[in-house]
Amino acid sequence: MNIIEIINKKRLKKELSYEEIKYAFMGYLNHEVEDYQMSSLLMAIVLNGMTDEEVYHLTDVFINSGEILDLSRIDGVKVDKHSTGGIGDKTTLIIAPIVASLGIKVCKMSGRGLGYTGGTIDKLESIPGFNVNLTDEEIIKEVNEIGMAITSQTKNLTPLDKVIYSLRDVTGTVESIPLIASSIMSKKIASGADKILIDIKVGDGALIKTKEDAIILSILMQNIGKKYNREVRTIITDMQHPLGRAVGNTLEVIEAASILKGYGEHTYLYEVCMEIASNMVSMALELPMDDAKELVKKVIDNGSAYHKFLEFINYQGGKLEDSKLSKKTKVIRSTKIGTVKEINALKIGMLSAALGSNRMTLDDKIDYGVGVILYKEVGDYVKFGDVLCTLYIGDNDNYPDPLDAFTIE
Image (cartoon, rainbow, N blue to C red; front, top):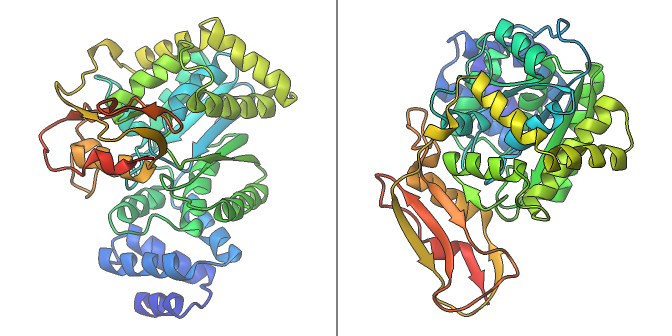
């Protein structure tokens, strides 16, 4: 086989065999296929798509590129959750402690930022001392002792996805349903969970832009789950506007803690987290959704979920009290009178990234203390001079005009 022929075949919208997919992708992992060649193949996939059979093949190649985590030494049902990503999405930091505080085992491997969307691991690394690189033994020990663990993808777990994920992030090949499905499901299956909840974000601030694409992705991931005898449940949530008020790593950790303390009830972020956590509890305990929601609300209200959050951070070496925000801030005020019609999630994400909260190249360093705090929501009435948001600014003073993200009429 020849990598050029494989690239051309996909460029011509022809179906790749299992052997061709394995040759190309494993060749890249083994440094036999160059970055620019894999980038070309990924772009051909983005432009021309893949058949379901090709997606099943790619998922299988990803899974078998490394080890599969054996969670049999953890008692009880193991549940996992994944979000397709969005601006201000800190849901994992909120829902994992909620579910674990109910005695349900949560073993989660998370990723770093992808494009303008922030990664859970980046957020956790903003906590001084926090260890995101757990061994298999450490994961199992922590889940058995406190009921949860969140770690970065281990070196031997789907290593192929890890290198492809990094390349997609910097080559404009992030937004592809086949690549998203294969990436997510290979990690979830290799991570060993019994039941998996996928939160598919839809809107300008998400990888998936339309409800129609979200439904396609939902069905595809459920079908992949069936092939590996995993129960997969999906929900579709809105990412037209930023999720919550905070965008930026340390800022989002602070907001997550606030939600777990019971603040923010009836906000959209709170409601989304309730929905995700309740679905996970419903699957794990085989309960109706209404009963699951009651349990979730109870552990937020009585402080158990927040206590589990602190226990988890301490267990993995984090010192939450030492987290720092940038000291340089800028208040952005409205130059109009009217109602907030839109807060564009993508523009807020681009703004936060320009401040330094995300990687735009493989070698970029993240400034954990920068980001954006929003003070208005869609539907709010604003007067001239009202504060719309505050920027936490690092070394970069070259960023988009924040007012462009707000539509006020």
